[in-house]
Amino acid sequence: MPVYHRRPRWAIAEAQATPEDVFLNRRSILQGMGLAGLALATAAATRPARGQDGGLYPASRNDAYKIERDLTPEDISSRYNNFYEFGSHKQIHRAAEALVTDPWDIEIDGMVEEPMTIAFDDLEKRFPLEERLYRHRCVEAWSMTVPWTGFPLGALVDHARPLSTARYVRFETFNDPAMASGQKQVWYPWPYVEGLTMAEARNDLAFMVTGVYGKPLANQFGAPLRLALPWKYGFKSIKSITRISFTDQRPKSFWEQIAPNEYGFWANVNPEVPHPRWSQATERVLGTNEDVPTVIYNGYGDEVAALYEGLEGESLFM
Ligand SMILES: Nc1nc2c(c(=O)[nH]1)N[C@H]1C(S)=C(S)[C@@H](COP(=O)(O)O)O[C@H]1N2
Ligand SMILES: [Mo]
Image 1 (cartoon, rainbow, N blue to C red):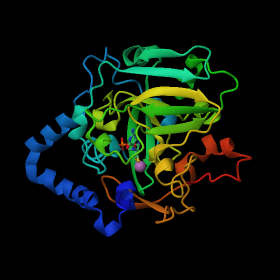
Image 2 (cartoon, protein in one colour):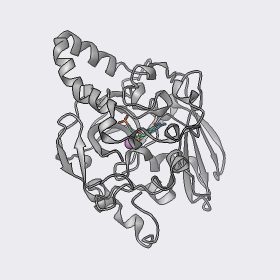
Image 3 (cartoon, rainbow, N blue to C red):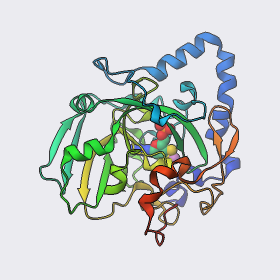
């Protein structure tokens, strides 16, 4: 099989990156469409993925997570997504309409006192929802700032009652090629998998996301349930989670399986550690296209740096 099929989109040289060009042109296209077009585009972006949300959205904002950066406009962030299950380019929002999120069950298994299956609807009501403004830094050197709605992953970990011998949490996305056209690309190691240490999972910043922009998650953002890990490169923030397993084995993530020399387990943001094929020193801000300096741990060092004390021998930044 051709090597380029095994490469992520960002493996392609900057000059050939057509989705990028599409993105850069999008704003002028929208302007050309006029107000009616804009309204339509926004309506599609904001269409709640699920039927009733029981008045859970918008949730009240937790002001501990305010940041100075401007929020990325929804019509930008909902039209520029990485979700390889629906295609290995950024314009997957239409294809992602095929994602069926109702009903949606999440399996919790592995090293737990008792395995369980939770319906998403029950999960969403069990934990108090709050809104947090988070930075998001993709390994491809673009970034956005979004208002996620959800609850701390730590609350779900407690609910799952892991055994004291569990060392990692492993997350898995659905695998359904009939629904998700990208999963017909059999050279990818589906399903998408990600992992955290127990300490990372219990860190207060690790957030289980059920909504964004004050509404239930639109499909392209990873409905109905995804992670947000703002101090790590974006690929760690797995979408459309169907299974959460506790284990004593370090999970091998989707991208680590594809290119272990480029994508590792830790993937903490660090401007001083370049990707093997490009610099991570700056990032392009979605919406303004301004290049700004990237910050260690994406600006969350006070909250997370202690997690990595004593692990200096590991590849913490890839
Ligand atoms: N299941 C799944 N989760 C995923 C991805 C994916 O392709 N599939 N892409 C990751 C990457 S590389 C990034 S940058 C973010 C993008 O999230 P966004 O589209 O909401 O901006 O999702 C992450 N989670
Ligand atoms: Mo990413």
